[in-house]
Amino acid sequence: MISVQPVPMNTVMLSDNTDSPDRLSRWPEVFVVPTFSYEVEYTLKEGNCTFEKEGKSLILTRDQKHNILEGMAAEIYKLKAYPSGEQIRKASEALVTKHLCLRERGSKTGYDGWKNSLCFKMGNYRTKLSRAGVKDVAVNAGKRSKSNPEASASRSSIKRPRRGEVNFLPNYPSGENKDILETLRLAMVEEFKKTTAERNMILIHQHMQRTFALRREEIVNSTSPIADLKERWPALFGEAQLYSEFHRITNQNLPFSFFAGLDKYTQQLLQLYKKKRTGIFGEKMANLLRAYAEQVRLMYNVLNIGVSFSICVNILTFVHQDKNDKRSKSSSFGWPTTLLERRLISSLQELQGT
Image (tube, rainbow, N blue to C red; front, side, top):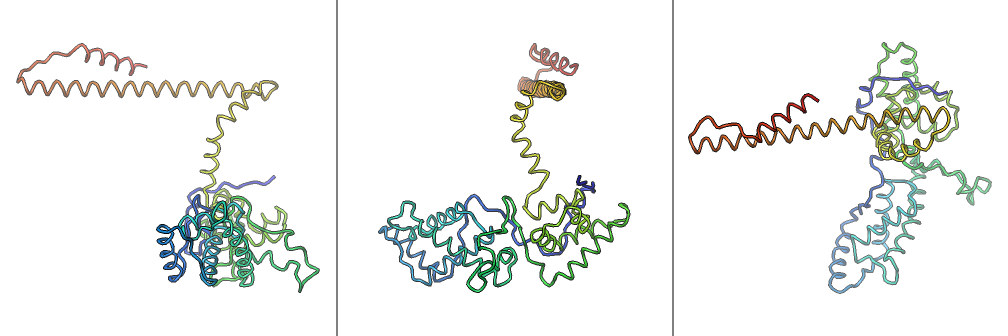
């Protein structure tokens, strides 16, 4: 069984001056079309005006279309190296929505051609980045080709981010290499040989941030057993770094995401538990649900008392203000307490007694 060591939570949010992961945002609900070259932007602006007046689509030159596809591919890659067909469709739709002059005639959607072009462009863009040494796409290089016919098929064992992973396989921080990061890893191992009180948790957090790329490279490229991973990265199995690592990979807060999901499905879980009425588990669950129902009832009672108390106080305040206004106008003293006030005071005393 894998044990997670509790670590003070004040070490989770510590920051340092190291490079942040490559991707800082997830795929948005609405894709934001990037800004293209000045010449292309000017052409699109004029084309949009013509489309609004005459309904004519813009005819692009080869270089202009290349500039648009290159800009779109770069923007898509910032969000995801291997976008799904649906995500490419949304990007294409956003393109023709912003620039109406790019809508295609004879197409049901107006962007089918752009979608196909973006699919091919993303493949070419990944190849270009792979040759440049970008790791999250270079990891899939070296597949079967004319120069390497004995290699595995190009579509086999593709290593790509799973659902929710934003920073899948980042590059090393600027100015650092594998040897430097390995030195930091060994320093963390030495720190964990000390007692809990003697460990420098700030230093460990900083080193964990800087060695994120090295750690992801090991996890993605190898299938090391958990025991080996725990030996090489002991800090990863602490509570604080577990939360931090989840945030580095997904850009989401783990406790918040977990409890938000739990709140979302609480009612369905309660209905499921209520159906389980047999056996020891059913008896324990029945007792737990009775305690939960009693807690909910008490909570509603307290809430109702608080609301009633607040209403009474507000009414009394209004009555006293109204009485003071009348006193100032009539210049009379000894204004008697009204029946409404006496009843409200009695109600307040009863509420305070409960």
